[in-house]
Length: 466
Picture 1 (cartoon, rainbow, N blue to C red):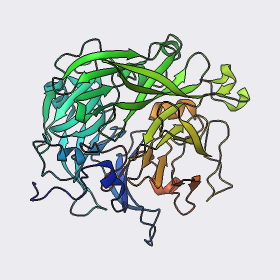
Picture 2 (cartoon, rainbow, N blue to C red):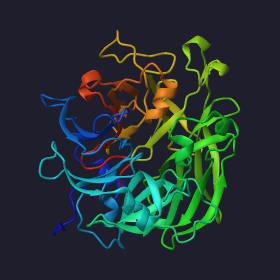
Picture 3 (cartoon, rainbow, N blue to C red):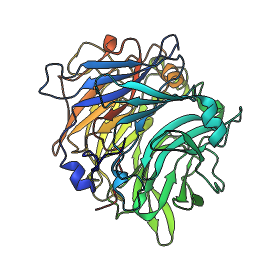
């Protein structure tokens, strides 16, 4: 439904977003690894003044089995305020929730009762396949002219190429494949943009057969996973340039461009180096008339007793950090880096993006350490900071512990558990909020993955005004 005035949760600039009221609810995708019961969207109370703060206060089961919810997003966001947006009066109301294994897409309405979201539309896998030629939908971004949905696989049993499908803002129907000319791009993962410069960026993971049953050692050591960034003309939908990060840098995943629309740089996290098991963050930036990338953060592997390690990394006698998510605060000052393997969340001051300075870290979980949360100091935890989401004002950071079912089982074969934590971020560093730690039975046997905050968050919105 169109609004007479733009949605109050749309912000013209990053400064406006930072000054916005704090979120009261968080929506979390949770999945059943066994596919014996439906996945769900859990609703968390994140209002510190509430009597149910830190608790699951809403729950929407999906109607099918085996979806494996992963990443999801809002139907509309601040990009609707861009001067060329054809839909300035859409509202941030619906969650677009893909199933990574099923290729099914749910549209979930949060407006009438935000703690009891309702499924209002379901797109079956054949709709994505027929209209866009894709499968395994992964990431959702709200653009000014529609919804951009990245997908890892091809249709009709084809493993690839992956790419982007465009969905209509209002009907949520699949309009078609976004790419007019994909050039050499084959692998897909994330997509985001420098929206005021008509530049889209994509990253690479692998095709469904390369990721669905866990890391394939032969492919990893053979340097066969994705390791490049692709730059596109956003309006012409054409591939412009590839930047190879080096084939030792396997799996270039989350993209975090600067929120300031006048700046043309961003960060991408790389899961692992096959040369030394380190993980890294690269900066992409404009270099004259071309794009370039530079490694600006390296996090080394940590030595460990082989007996404490899962079979997949026992031969190495070390725990790789495994950077599986990064997030950039809306003011572009702080970059958060989740090290799912070692169980560490790091914060870097990236005021100078070419020279990040570490400015705080916390430990929780981890393959070898199993660090407990301060709220339950006697409970060793599996998993680690995985998906990380930052509030608009940058003061609150939310992390969940599950990566992807088969990868959870591979790196945490004794069980990954289920938990979510919140940290307070101040100029002095990071600290756990001991009042906020939903874990175990709070998740009803499911594993929590991505978080979206009511009214938007640091990885939801694009801004067209500085």
